[in-house]
Amino acid sequence: MQTMRQLGGGVIIAIISVILVIGGIFLSLAETLPPPATPTQIPPTFPESFPTPTATIIGSRVTDTPSATQMETPAVTASLASPTACTPPPGWILVTTGSGDTVYALAQRYKTTAENLNAANCLTSADLPVGLALYVPPVPTVTVIPCGPPFGWVKNYTVQPGDSLFRIALLYNITYPQLQRGNCMGNSTTIYTGQRLWVPNVPPRTPVPGVTIIPTLPTSYP
Image (cartoon, rainbow, N blue to C red):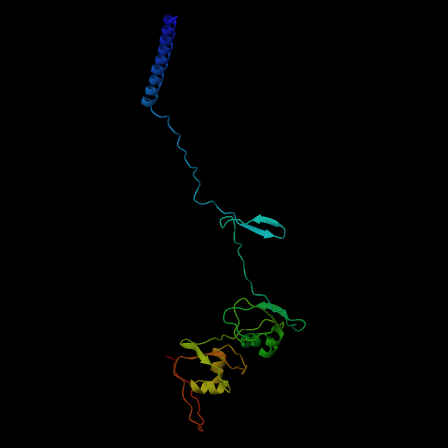
């Protein structure tokens, strides 16, 4: 009986020893093996900036605005049209001004007055741009008298209150018909304050108060 007890105790001790040995082996293997690799999470990358679409709200509808390369600027051709606020006299025709034309020159060419042309076309200046459409009276073919500033003249005189063609001609030692012809005024003597006139390129004379200056025609121009 005692022998059986000793044999059973030896078997139990052997089993425990085997369990301890096997556990020690597993522990040693667990310490020598490298730890499992932990996957590294890579954060997603985003572009620095996104193109921002441009939209135009029209009413309740949103439409994309085309880019600068898609837009084409149409060429705009500006043309001078005849004034519509004034009513020309019956029978008057439409003409286009040319280089050097003035109200006085047109009035002489079409046998009328500068005042009539101003009233019929709502003009406020005697100087006319090239290409302006104006109403003029119909006349037969007229021989145009050449006019314009002679060589050496400058558009340097501004009409002052109280000025007249005769007084301005005296200042520059010329006759008033020369002043009319140099400024394409025809036979008109009408001038207005602020109007710029072509005059000889010489210093104006200073009239002496109370003395009448008799102008003499110059023999030559500088």
